[in-house]
Image 1: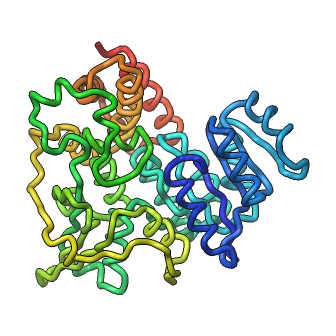
Image 2 (image 1 turned 120 degrees about the horizontal axis):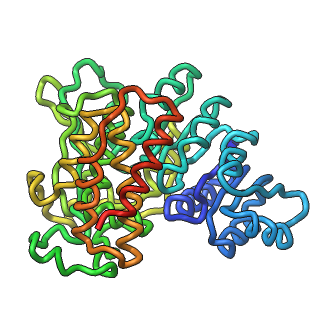
Image 3 (image 1 turned 180 degrees about the vertical axis):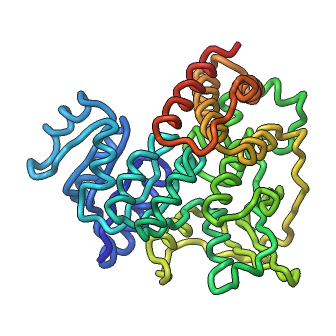
Length: 380
């Protein structure tokens, strides 16, 4: 029986993680849940999975929740609540599925307690990959990827000699606007941007997919997860999202991981690795699909991906600032304060004002993060 603590239980990855747990109740016990403001859904999850601890975003929500759940369940809130859920239970595995850089302190706390990390919060490695991977290595803690692309690379590398790896390629659907020109992008709406053609995801990651920031963050994440240089990480447009990613070896041999777009597959693999459990999901039929399409990445069409590569190569606080500025820009777009193309304008302007600090500690990372958020909120 594997005990799970889940950060971000009411989000897209969180709810699908609980679907996997519910499908295999003999193998998984949900020990703790952390959510934001969706109290109604959290209440349903508490009734179904009976965790010992839960956490919500605010003190007010926590006080309200206490009156609606059994007395034996401990309730926490805020950043400290996230850390308690991540590090303060008997869980073997912590699934980090919160959105944004808020997942970093909780992930570090879980690593310190020797918890296995199922990582769906890419911002953790983007913001402080050097700290996270160093601490995980020191503690002997495995970090298993949940993102479909990184899970695909992880699976393709199983049993292969890493020294013979030539490169990896992350595939990208292209998001909601993959077939639109730059001129057409000037007119798109929030509603348009939230219509992802392949995946069912939260609003922030769906916008990031449309700007290609999400793929940029995945490139930086792959750099830390697999110890590769940015020259060894490629991105290829693949509209069908059937090949989730692939690796190429020195002998030109390529191994790819394929499947229908279904996040439960990489989630479950991270929870069951190195085993595989049955999953009630649609099986892939290549004959039914008929054709798969691919296009070279156009960095002129998707400048946010170029910026992500630049920030990754720059290192230090540059990825932290890129990520924080993007979180603010996306939130402003969703509030209709700026246009879709102003997201990338905001990132460009913030990065132009930043001088990267090499090998930052946690305090420097926090300062850079807050600086970037302040500047991004003021960009016009």
